[in-house]
Length: 156
Image (tube, rainbow, N blue to C red; front, side):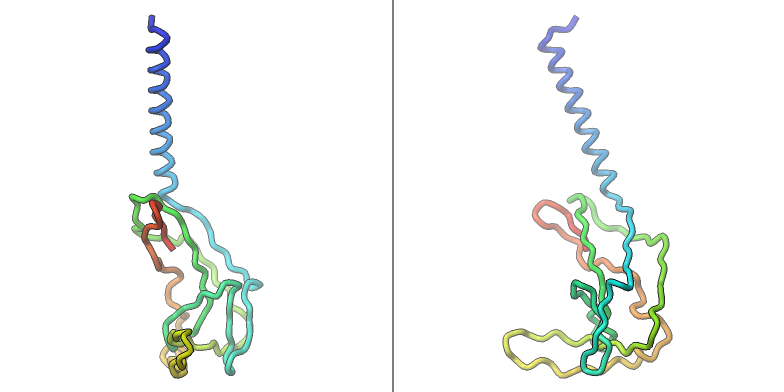
């Protein structure tokens, strides 16, 4: 028969082992993300700027290729385990909805300093992109950051 002290020690060891197993399982579970991202037409804000159509979301993040259509983008951020890296992103399905109307979207401009200096000259729309029948941008998503904040891994 085990003494009470040894029994408590073994019981404590079982709890510790169970906790370690649960932590390892949690790391494996959270290393994969499955979810969905939805954008509704009602989230888009349409306005005019210098004779162009200007389209935004509530948060002002845009495509940045100078001369290409400046389109709103969603930036999503996820915390990942510190010892994990983004290997790939798989899109299982996507649906595109055409918005009725004809739009001449404002072209993305080079960044300019906010120190009072003159902004760079206006860049006209890139005719190769604006004249193409291919959708722009040509990719649904891109990893724009993969790094660490404090002791947590982060990906955007």
